[in-house]
Image (cartoon, rainbow, N blue to C red; front, side):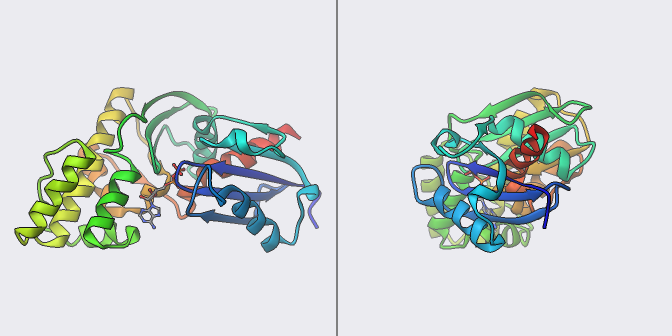
Length: 259
Ligand code: ADP
């Protein structure tokens, strides 16, 4: 039995995430529910974490909420911006990281991290779906491919298709038109992954990013985007199986510091 437990909840635009830590910052339980703010996702992610750990909300010494929908978690002790939470979570997963690229369901961010492992500055695209998980989700649906297959299939391509439209709606028409011309699926997907990477690389260059670099957010699981980003930025980018949970983890770590 731990001395205390804390909970970090990240209510995103597309997914809801929850992490419970003990006093040694060991993960007791974690989960991702694939629906975000305004849905049953936030309640389900908390319920599932409590059920799996056999703990109750009363067992939590501090609950920190973050993410786009953080203010909807009424039982949280406090909330923090997803930028600070991702910076904190990423510094935990990737000690010494200087630049974090976070691509979620509805936005993409490049974060500069201080020597102390906190947020220094950031650049963000939250105005346009292109360059975010939403763009990839739309394309995966058109291509009838599971989102988790977008990376592996794209990596098979030796001749990525060119996707010239920067707008998601026009790019969707472009992909449908190329499909009807029998452009191979792997080339189309590689072109789509590249398009997200080149938009994100623009953000990273704007912030004047330094190595070592790491990637968080659900799109970090797309190895095609990751490899294309490495090529665009001419550097290696580290990721982690918990990349999508970086915000919830950062919130939970901040909760331990409040105690
Ligand atoms: P948010 O915090 O904004 O709700 P997330 O960081 O959870 O978003 O990222 C959600 C996005 O991650 C989805 O839109 C999807 O494109 C991508 N994603 C989720 N799981 C995978 C996976 N297994 N492989 C590739 N991409 C994924």
